[in-house]
Length: 158
Image (cartoon, rainbow, N blue to C red; front, side, top):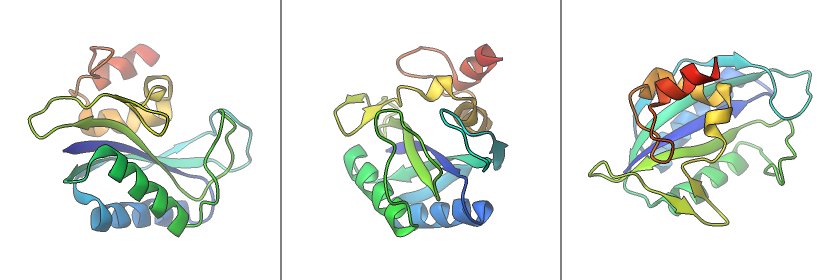
């Protein structure tokens, strides 16, 4: 299965936080196929004096989507994240790892709508800090619900 992630951090050594998250994902989830550049962005959905550093990552994994989610949440805890955003209340964080898109080995999109995990990520297309790095590594990938490529969705945001 191929999984696309969004990574974000706005506390501590942000570049090191992203690199450590990528390393842990490589060890615990699977082979890194591609990693975007790191993008400095303003906070989204809350006010903070700390800017974010964001990236997108594509990984080939043998894990099921809910196993990937559990593993990313464990990585967040290992790196010092103490709580997840709840009910759209956002705050500063050492690391945030979001699953954006998943595709089965045959290229079929994985669609999920459970209390724990929704795929594709329901807000990804509204967030430039997600779409810009994602378009760098997956511009031609088609969003399985919206029917447009990641590049087209980013262009529509401008």
